[in-house]
Length: 96
Image 1 (cartoon, rainbow, N blue to C red):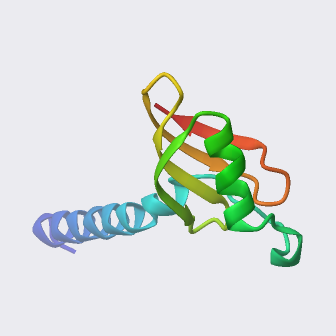
Image 2: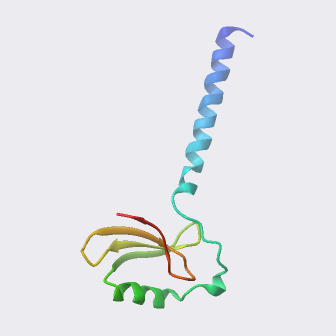
Image 3: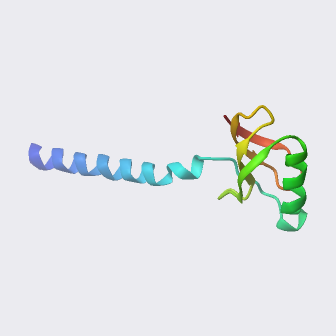
């Protein structure tokens, strides 16, 4: 194998590894919740609870990891992104 072929193979392998790593990065974006959906709080009840605590919810969704996720502001008006356990309502991760 020539040094040119070896270098080309190494560059291709490195590029493939980078693409694979970049493609899987979003999977690490938030927590994962392993809770059966039958045990989840109703979305409307959960939203009402958060709003009662002073949160203003701009976006409410179920994350890829099957957690409740909100984007909005807290009672001080500070922007938040929070992941919750959908059964208990416990905060799993918060980004401000």
